Image (cartoon, rainbow, N blue to C red; front, side):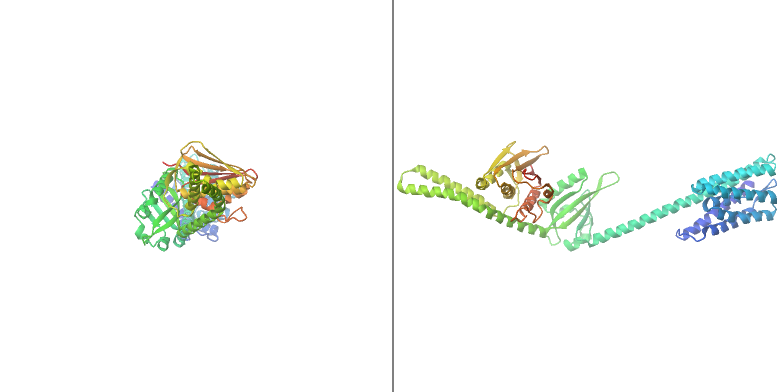
Length: 540
């Protein structure tokens, strides 16, 4: 029966601790005014109950009245602790306790608790509970030794101290569990709030941007599309989700996209690509897309996010600019070509005059035919620049293309006292290219080098293979050079260092090289010339 009484008292004590915690949770964890007073009053009422229902054993009254006092002192301080312990003491004395030892012991315990609180107020509540429990056990043993015969019934005193300590342990466990749950709840609430705000912001962006956002899996099946697809391409979400993205990409672009995707799956880095996408009207829209891999917990790519922008109109504008720049280059070359044509025409005219006098010389006829073939070659090169260019790539020896370009610019070089020096480390070197487009790039680069060399000099042109399977064409002039801080801006539309330039030439060169999956870089210093390197993939 004694064990059952202990269990009942501890159970009631547990309920006593749990009730205020539950009540506090109903206030959504908001602070309560005068919490120390109300908790002290609440604990005071329950400690009276513990005194009334104390366990009687061998003439001793065993109760838990000091367990709430220790807990309240540790968590809420001396004010609430004094309130908690005052009334139970009076109740204890009223029921029939020993006035002198009980009152003296209670007073001594309260004084020790208040003094000790000055030193332990900054440590954790659990440590405060342990210290106060140790103080109470020590004071109890001292007072029992003074006023009672502790040797007569030591087990009773041991049971009582164990009883109180168990109550304190249970209360501390319940309170600390609640505090951890309280903090966890606050943290989760904060995280939920942030997630909701983030989701709201992302939804706001996704639903109102004109950029096309697509999420695909590793099998290239569409898992999500943004609402902007309806405005740009005409598709509803239900029409695209679940289908393979390859069915909507232009067949000529799919192999390039597949190669790019495979590279991204290997190196887990985002890629920028351009391709044609089919709209609902069965037309083709030019898209510029940034593909970003989404890495899962096992560091494998689970999804790919593709953010695209319609660049159809921009492509058309670039095509117009490309054609305009062609015409400008043709006009600038016309003077040099005309000068070159006058020389063979003068020769032809002179020998025709001789032929009129001597009608029997075949040697003159052969010379005339040779000069006529030279005129045809020059005019053919000139006409090739004005013709519409094909979009398909052909396998070509890069050396032949450079030599043809240098032949075209030879007259301008002679007029400016400039010599072209071509060196090739290995021959032949083949690339896949559109001949006229690359020729336009080389013409523009070399022409810029000529204009930068007012005093003449040499332009070194070198063709070599790189270690990673690329073809590198470098152009090194001896011109005035470019300040290093201006190099990053080269290629921007309408940015030029010439007085009469448009800034479109290098922009178009960049675009053509990009279409050939290559790159162009610049190195220059003032009065030390400029080095331009064009890197292009080798033909397979």
